Length: 330
Image 1 (tube, helix red, strand yellow):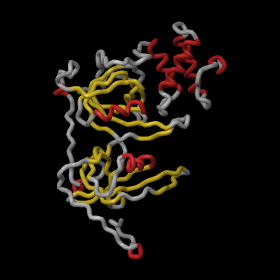
Image 2: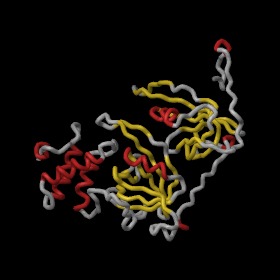
Image 3: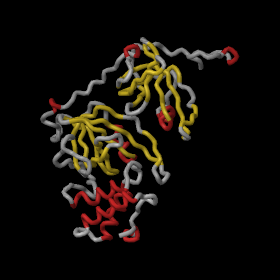
Image 4: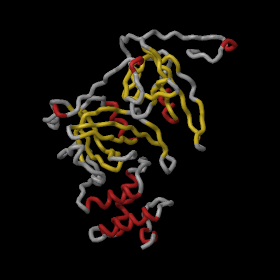
């Protein structure tokens, strides 16, 4: 059985022998239930549905075809209306499970990130950490799902339909939405609100002062942007990228907040300017050369308004001839 046998199947041009063997093994598992044309058609439909999801491989698409015939549930077409059915708990779902529903609390949300698929198409993804009384897991939202973030905040109880579980990008497992998956916040008036909500983790924003930040922790702060430098280019291991470090101040001190590569576009998309008050949620603190800083990854930065005890912004303009290696220069 060679590649010509699967003529018409949208396989990766550089598919490895190991992955192609996985395709053949998958076909052998379902050949009594599907014709070859049906097998190929289902594979191609899943690959088209997830064309913006660059982390999926041909092996993942084969799992989507095969698992419903080997004991796993699936839905080829997500419903247009919200029907959670019988929700699963986070702990009971294993990689390979598809088309299930879950109810959980939102523990963190990332800013949407830009990516380029293997076909050169641009897309977006965002990560959400969700938890119930059995565990916690990363939920990945793709281009078509980003719209749901407008109506979701940290701490919300959410119900989510048509979720897939796969091996995590960093190990373990993660949940992933389909293009037509649905996600919404619910409250005590919803018939699906968990009766055991008291057993769910409680979300605490826990804003701290900049002076209280210690290395290697997830932290949240509110401060004023006092410096928004122009991103500069760098090259590492033959790859080019961009980086910039915003400077944020509260009444206790200052800290750098670093944006890498495509995340530097957050400056424009959020219209970040010097003098803005921002809230930074669930970002990682690191220490280097005695300096503690924050790096943007799975947390997020938001512009906020309100009466905060933060120093006023003072623009410091000096003549170019007097500018040396000093900070706070505009």
